[in-house]
Image (cartoon, rainbow, N blue to C red; front, side):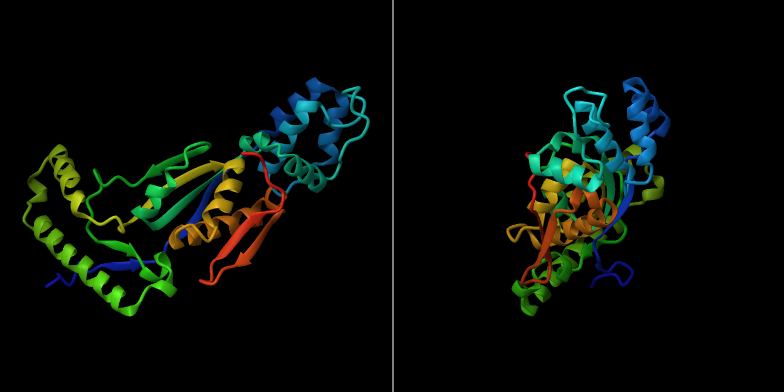
Length: 278
C-alpha cells in the first residue's frame, strides 16, 4: 500500500516570465551623440514609441547598421521609416533576424515533465538553461503533470490513464521503501548527494521539474512556430502556447505577424506570416 502522505500529486504545468532585456538609456544617448546630433533628436522624438525596451534595443541596433536615425547622417539615406511598426515589419519581411538576437527573455517553466525538458534542451543556439538537479534535490513528493495536460486527451482512454496511474503508484511505493530505510540525519552532505544521485535513476521521465529558460527573440520566433505545430508533442505545444501569448502581449512589434489557428485538441498553433531567416 502506498503511504498516505506520499501520494502522486498531479500538477498543472505553467510558464512565468522572469526577466527581459533592459536598456541603459544613458548609454544609448551616448551612442547617438557620437553618431551626430540628428541621431540624438531621433531618440527624443520617439521616447515612448516602443512597447518594450527589448524592441527599443533591437531598433537602435538595426539603425546603427545603416546610421538610419534620420536623413543627413548617412548621405546614402534619403528616406527613413519613422513608425516603429513599419520599421519592424520591414526587418521581418527582409529576414533581418540577427538584430533580434540582441534582446532576450527568461521564463520559468514549472511542473513540466522531464520528457519535455529533454526535448527543450536540444535547442542550443541563442538559449540558456538552468534545471532542478536531482543529484542534489531529494524528492519527498512525486509530482507529475496531469495526464490531461501532457498527453493529447483525444488519444488517452480512461483505461490507459488508470493503468499509467497504477504503474506510477507502484514505482512510488518502491521508492518510498528505499527512502524510509535510510537514516538521512546521520549522513554527510556528500553521502546524501551520492545516494540521491543513485535513487533518482528509478524515478520516471514524467516526473515534474522546474527549468529556467532564456532565449533571444530570433530563437523564440522559431521555437514558437516549431513547437506549436501539430507535429510537436501535446505538452510542449501547451507550454509554447503560453510562451507565445506572453510574447504577443509584451513584444507586439516583434511578434505582430504571428497568426493563431485552433487545432482539434484545443491547442493553438502560432505561425509567422513574415519569416525571419534562421
